[in-house]
Every structure is written in C-alpha cells, then in structure tokens.
Length: 115
Image (cartoon, rainbow, N blue to C red; front, side):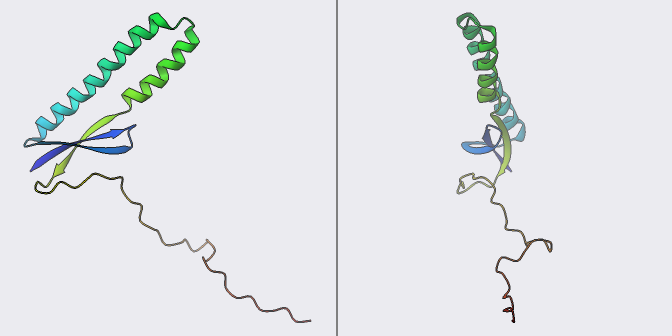
C-alpha cells in the first residue's frame, strides 16, 4: 500500500500535497520534517519580532496570531490507492433525517375556523 501526505491547514482544511510514499514510515518522516519546518519558521519569526516589537502586550498578541497561523498546520498520512489521484476535499456532511421533535419541513394543512 502507498501513503500520501496530506496537510490540514489550520487543522481543518485538507490540502493534497501529491507526495506519495511506498512505506508508512517514510510518510511519517516527511510529516515530521514538515512540522519541523513550520516550527523553525515560527522560531525565526519569534526572534525578529521579539527585537522589533517594543510593547510586550503587542508582542504577545502578534506571537499568538503567528503561532496559530504556522503551528496549526498539521500533516497526516492517508492510504493512497495509486493510479488516478483524486483531489482531497473536505468531508461532505450527510443530510440527516429530522428528529421526531422537530417540526416537519412542510406545514400540514390547518382546518379553517368555523364561526
């Protein structure tokens, strides 16, 4: 079985990388390398921001935003069937049947009031 590295941007939105590996361990190693790249980018940003931003409260806010932007991207290895690669999309929600306590989608006819 082959494995594909997929990146979840912001931990949610899947992005197909088209990186396919023969071994699961190779895919995991690539995911670790990607995670280390994001951590290194954050550390480089943090060093320059700490020297550039004078107010401590501004630095903390900017650091939190940058950490979410860079460190919330995660990779995952998914089975790849080979052949034609299908684009990775967000899972579609299946429509669920309305619960019995919910009102019906179309109102039932009401009897006309009699005088």
